[in-house]
Image 1 (cartoon, helix red, strand yellow):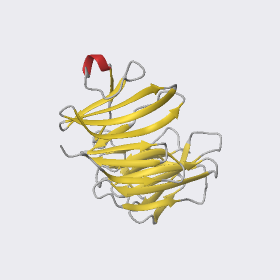
Image 2: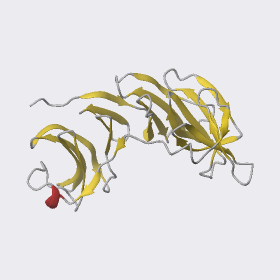
Image 3: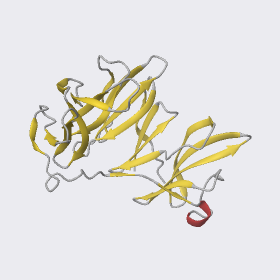
Image 4: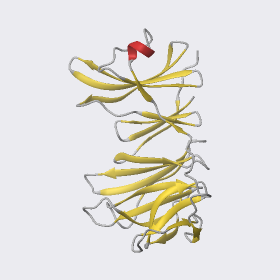
Length: 253
């Protein structure tokens, strides 16, 4: 049986804080936060080819910025209203393949992605009036329509929590610590993320199994203090996960 190997393995200078996947192009965008340097940076790569388009892209604002979404090859970034506030302001459109700034609008705020593009609003106008924005040039296309502009469907599949003894009797390679594991069955593979406690050390592991055989294993976190959230997602047969908070890895299933 063929063992699986990563087709993406990239380490960043900071913790991977957030990731977004472009449903139209397969581009994966990441928000990286280096707390020591108070620097937020961004990266983009292809989940189809594994190519890293850019890394360590920054805005003039070093820290109080982040990712809204990536859509049709354009990365949408934001600032924050205040240093102590979670409220977002402004939208900056970045070419997700080159890192070139395409446009910026400092009066609009991102709300969500629709099947026809970003839904936005002007926070200074009440009551809130939703608009449809063009990611190509940042211009308003028209007023937002709930009938026409439905929430964008995502192909991201996340694992769910299961009780090992009920769903995975006798096939887990390690005795899990705790009562639950993260589990997914996908295209003939069983994918499991579990925690172990050995010699007082709490660890998090990822296993991919086929026909009850281990075809891939990685130690995601070692010597951690508490149970971690779900460790992986699958998008179009690409399994994506974060290792030690700083390394992005993708495996083709």
